[in-house]
Amino acid sequence: CVQWHANCNYIATGSSDKTVRLWDVQSGECVRVFVGHRGMVLSLSMSPDGRYMASGDEDGTIMMWDLSSGRCVTPLVGHTSCVWSLAFSSEGSILASGSADCTVKLWDVNTSTKVSRTDEK
Image (cartoon, rainbow, N blue to C red):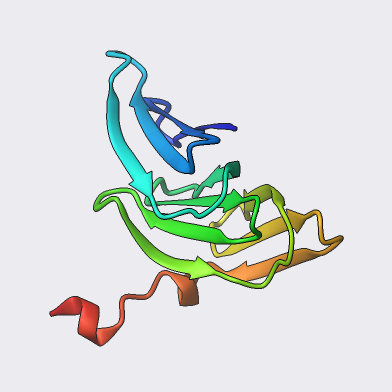
């Protein structure tokens, strides 16, 4: 899967090697590798403000990534099969996911991306 960043300077790719890579369009260089999925990455979506990226895998897990740090903010668990599609709402507050488990789920991005107090230290 492939997804443009909001500023059009980067492209993200999801792979069968269970990683997501962020590529600089001008140089062609890989600038960041996101690791944490346990299955092949099948879907990607970038938040409209360019701060976050969501990736879905064949195991039904969605990872919400902070693009500046490269860290997973939170895994979103609830699907029982492949996550085929992801889309942020136009204002970026809701993430929709479609799965092979025949469900569409809506996720509150504001709740999912909050940093816990222990992570702030």
